[in-house]
Length: 100
Image 1: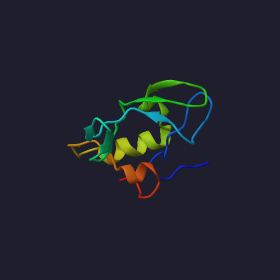
Image 2: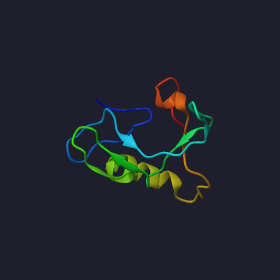
Image 3: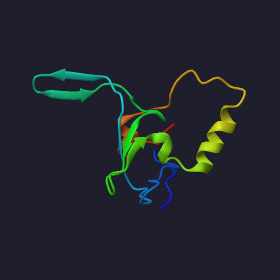
């Protein structure tokens, strides 16, 4: 399976899983005593804690990225300054919209 959306280039280095991962992320939530609603984009970076649900390998997301994607990202950022991390909307997490 080759991912081309939110998990493009992400693969467990131990078991080869590419289907799904637990990724620590940040979002603004509207919280009441009854529950919570996401009110912002969901964001994560290469430093986000990531865990494979199949073999439980964990570490920074960067350790789960394929070498080819890491090289491509490094070359695309040469000569440019990144001011912000990529953000992912709740819709993109559910597969309803593409990730940036």
